[in-house]
Image (cartoon, rainbow, N blue to C red; front, side):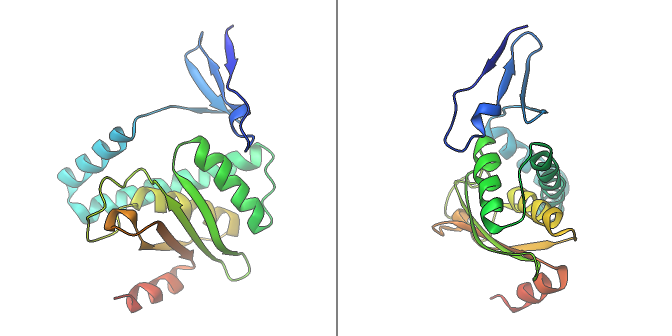
Length: 189
């Protein structure tokens, strides 16, 4: 059986990446992964919008992302990541987020007691140009929301308050209890 491990990376995530050429698989932390071009994500987003309209497409992307985010946290637990402090969450975001090519994530605020998080990222996969009028990171925001909800042990919602797709210097989501996010959404310009 031919197995090749990638080179060690600073974050430690890369040393868990295993390519089994005989079976044609790629795995990390005991879970199977695939490498897909970002343009495939764009094609999926476009097809959903063409088939169901922008509102339903946005909802699909967000909800699929949310499920994926919860799975990332299950994977992090299985891999032995400790998730108790904001620095633990930053370590997971840096390791798994970067390993999977989602972009560079920064935990700005993370408070399990208040069930509140503010997360920034750059180079998100859904940003195609920087001239849009509305945020575009529905899938990525869903992943973050699902992950944070899993850590908090409760259902969360989110709102993207900055987006590189609108020309902002970074993307940023506020994640928290549904009623608090609804309140924030109602008060935004």
